Image 1: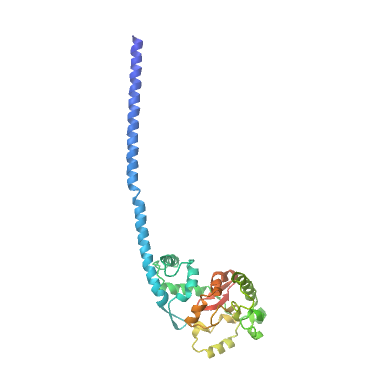
Image 2: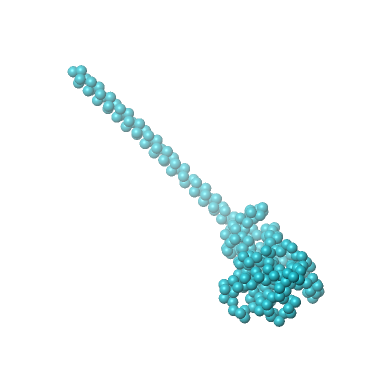
Length: 294
């Protein structure tokens, strides 16, 4: 009898334990389900906020792009004592500076401008207005040849007539600083391979190299309206490290119509993308003018 009662007590205890476990499990599952439901209700808020932010950002850059469309052709600015209009002549250099190939009239271009403005300490609104563009011009100018001390005669070599736009140019007018000439020959060899230029092509041949201060003064007297942007008083040509290179059109005409032709030739495009590899930097105002800065 005692044994039977003992068995009954054990069975009741086991049943009670089972009921307790089942109850706890049900409560835990209910709690997890509640948390899952709560989480599922919260998650959509994050992408919704991101979508709203992206929409606002896109609208801002679309507005900036609309302004850039106007400024590209109409921006009024001054350089070298001359009034300038628009920055369309410098699309390639601008794209190279921004590290973008996007068209200057697009929202993606405006976003690239904003990133550059932020790095440059400007208001990052994506608009290439006068302040932003002149900061870019200053950056380009700072990349040019710093030391313009006239070269010593021993630093020169005489360039081959085959490398000059005018092969009949006098020998004293074919003087080039030694390292500059070596770099130039490497550069045009690469350009000829890429552009498939023939031996009779004039593209990338040297128009002008070393100029003495006296010769520069003579050029200035002959072109009194050239301004400091065109024929500098302290010219980098004095060093023998500045080369005027033929890129198309009228070789050295600064009229906007002529430069518009030059900046769209394959030769100029190649130089913008590749000249720096060989040590050459551009003078932004003259598509034909490149300086060896190494």
